[in-house]
Image (cartoon, rainbow, N blue to C red; front, side, top):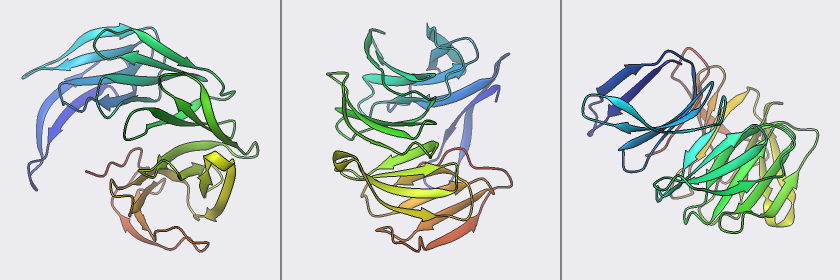
Length: 241
């Protein structure tokens, strides 16, 4: 992707507000909660950019090459970026590198913030799911299944349960405080994204076939779902607003 676009969606009408093309490939994108900034991971650097009325202008650069996962905190004062197997946390406004989360042996594929921004949960290709303290920079809980490669995850609002997708077409429910996998459900398709609604009552997933699934929740052994074919290519991100 070499194009960055800003969309607005008042009620049911979606409009394109900004469109800008860049000379290099973009690997990841994260929008600031205020809607005024955007993080984009390019091949050479991670760039924090301002969303202006008629332009997307670079504001600050960070030396993270080919960043494939970045995420702002819910409050917007911090952001986390994957630097291969390292997670780096920065201040959005002072640009200070406040913490480096070390522990993953494989590439970090997904980073999620708790609702109060005090914890981060991450997963990687080495089969590890870790919960980190943002202030301490330490790993607090974990669940490791070395036979799996995890690609994305989502959290319940109380942070008690984590749902993780692996490359073997399995959706797993984990309790990180006990380091246990409660259940693993075969999905029959490669899921590329999983997201829980803000209420914690609905679970959605995107697939490699371009469909969106609404999974029966709480998750059961059968992994029942309703499927809607929406895209002709793999879904890369799903957001519930």
